[in-house]
Image (cartoon, rainbow, N blue to C red; front, side, top):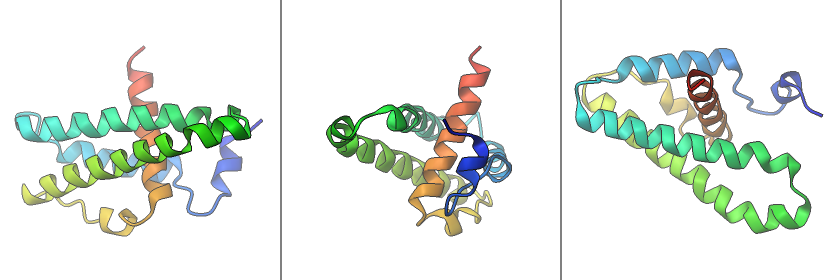
Length: 127
């Protein structure tokens, strides 16, 4: 059994407070009238939801199942990173300040944490 506190003691854990701040910044940067921006946003959200599903089931898998799914989980994680980078770069070109991303950009684990948070927010709002 695991708790949120168990997660927080992990190296480089990106907690809810930070995720909320970063997510708010990403959302604020979104120009809902810009079809290209909206498309990049949806790509990021879709990749985040897909990755969060794979990550969420990870601790339920046995060793053989993990080995069988590890490559696909990495592919999904890479897609999150790729789509987030595209969205951030596009927003920055449009004049948005997302400079905080420069610190996170090389940290796969934190980007994965943010993707899971985003998926969590979307799941809650889908009720």
